[in-house]
Amino acid sequence: MTYMLTATVLSAAAIAFYGLSSTYSISGLLVLGGVAVSGLLAQLAMTLAFSHGSPTLAATLQYSTIGFAAAYSYLVLDETLGLSALVGIALLAISGGIAASLMPAVPLSSGDSVTARAGSGDGSRSHHAHTAVR
Image (tube, rainbow, N blue to C red; front, side):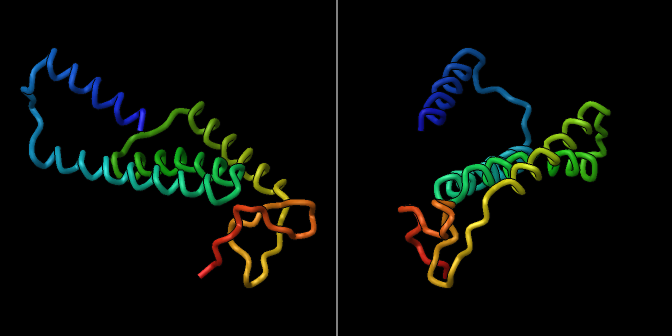
């Protein structure tokens, strides 16, 4: 909520300073709107993942967006990345794989939630694991 309020206030200040004149086309604004809606949905999904799942796994998977963005920019926008960017993406992928492999596995029974967390190692669930898988 704070982010949205800050962005709104700063945007209003920029409009007051620069005015409303622009060179944007309707198609460009539609594309920008699509990006905004996609970003909103992705952020809501990540918020849900952090609140219901393993924070370590959610953070690890969140870093995969960098690799997807690089692939998208290469395939769609015909952009190429430098060696340092490719090495950085590889290091993120490797460290994410290591972090995910070091997470303790918690077996889920049919009545357990996907949000079961590693407790004492006996497969017990935390108080967050109350929603059954449907």
